[in-house]
Length: 312
View 1: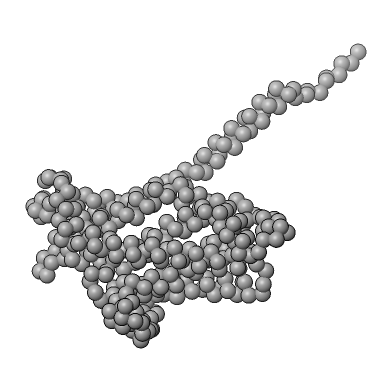
View 2: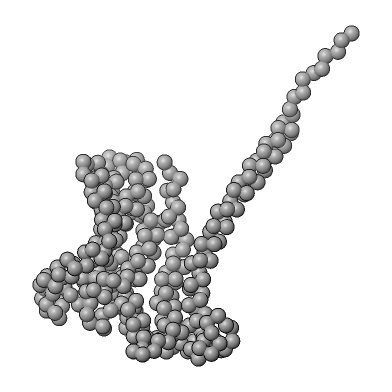
């Protein structure tokens, strides 16, 4: 009498356990793969934060303590006297207002014009959309310093009424700095916004077109509200770029009363001696507005950079 062995079958409970074990192994392997990424991010964060932390540490110490004990010491008092002196001696209140006059219109104009161009090259089918996008993108590859002399002569010979400029031309005006910053930043914003708008479903504008909506209405009522995360991310970047710009205001503005805050540190330099603790305090003061803006818009900034990254 021969006996046959019945085949072993997997019960539902055994299959569920194997699936859970397989998922656990996969999660464990993924965690191991992320160690290198986390280490790289930590190292990069430390490299970026150390200069800022060192500037803040130097600004909190009086110059005599640094001269007596050295920069790499912890002896001596810590106070905010350097910040108070830098604010009053450097005239930061006036220069901050100049930066606001330059930065806010430049950012708004850049985002508005770039959104129009991005809509034209991404949501409208015509034969020049790719060509124009390439031209706008290629403009970012040109160093701004190459155009310094031609732009200076252009602003010098562009005649305007004396009610607009006390020099009779575009030099020594906020308009010249705003126009040049807008022109140089619009290419980058067009490239980013066009890629973002391409990720939006074409059914949105097609349905609006069937309902009788024109291009302007599609742009303003459909595309623009959906691009708010991208506008928040780009707005944060553009505020930082234009606010920190030092080259164009120094080139076009000769009147010291109209210079932005990035040039206020020059007022803290002495003729024969430089107080580096005072200069560090001035540098930290100029950084504070950009840090506040980034912290306030951090969620929108991250969402604007990552939203659409998983769309095909």
